[in-house]
Image (tube, rainbow, N blue to C red):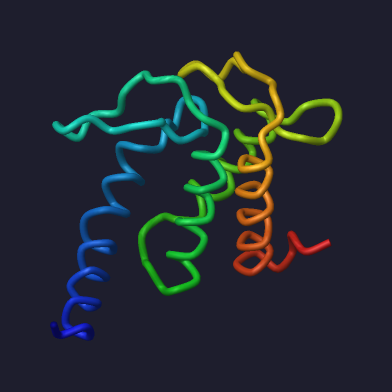
Length: 134
């Protein structure tokens, strides 16, 4: 197996297909958040949105920008984390678990996995937007 060749193909697919698809179809410009899934025809679904999807996608786009992807990663990273805070952040400082497609929290329960993704996205946003470091 040619690892270097496979890596180059995978990076080309990521930059040329996956990231543009998720930027264009997986980001809900109306709400500012990411959809849970895209169907096989490339259309966003109205599935409920797990909290972890939001910071995970923010991380993906922040990392893509850090690696030099020239697509519009800044908008989705900034708006995605704002949506995450607006919809999922609870008064105790933790994040709830699930929202509907319209951005209404439907499960405010604590899940450590969701909190871990939040921290990951915050760390990456601080790397690509130094003014967010505090």
